[in-house]
Image: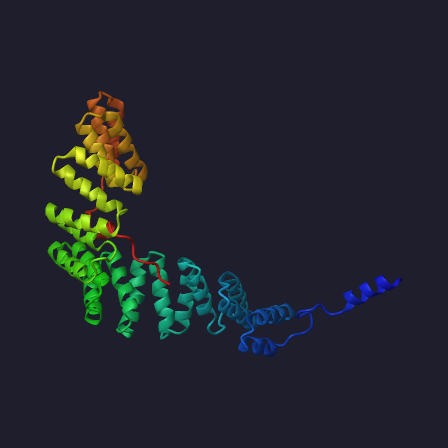
Length: 375
């Protein structure tokens, strides 16, 4: 054997640099406590390689990975720990947190439920379970836990606000109004909370109260996003068109690309029998926001009245593409086909009207941006 081959063999027989030699959990823990997370990760991986049945080691590996925001890897480590020992303290909660941080709210529900079952007094687990249900849009389940958490921590404005928004989304207006009132006692100068309370009043049919809240929000925060649009929409809904127009224009001063404000200005022109003024505004709104369905419906109506059937049909078909289950576009298209003598096409569209007829009342909740996801 020559000298080069001997040297190569010696290298192969030496322990690999890293943690090929035995590593104890205490050594891995010491690295973690020193804040050397990269080395601690290697050490815990070595510990788990040495003993693949060590549930606590997998749990510790997950903790170190979470501290580095490596939540996918952390979740895998926590799952292995729980598979080995489902009752390992704190690991179900940690798994839920990792999934929550990844925005996997539905997946986070099961581990948080497990953590809460193990300790029903764990308010962190209850709060995170409620927020996970909220993020997964399971609002009724979210309310059960968020109400308990909010009652336990009345000074936590963010938690109170999440509860109020959850109640708003599940159309429990009494709950949302009561909760927003409590928040305003702590933060009376919050334009955002006045707006949300206004949404709750509008949803419960109290339009005048809703207007008052949006007026307060506009006074406190005249540049708050959508505050003037929201107030304008409420005036529009109450048929106070002059006041509505002023507020939509104010919104456009703050945000010239607010497509909904432009579309409602167009609708005001349409209501005032000024189609020449309405059509370019509707087209501009659609250019800015192609999914603005009611603008297509309005254009379809205008073009139908002008007997411009090709453009009316195109606009109504665009509305259908956005939501085929809404009956209004089908009805208008059926009437056009009827006028054009297209009997078969007309009957087909009328049949869809009967099939899909269900329409919720419009309110401000459907117009403003959705609330933020939990973090």
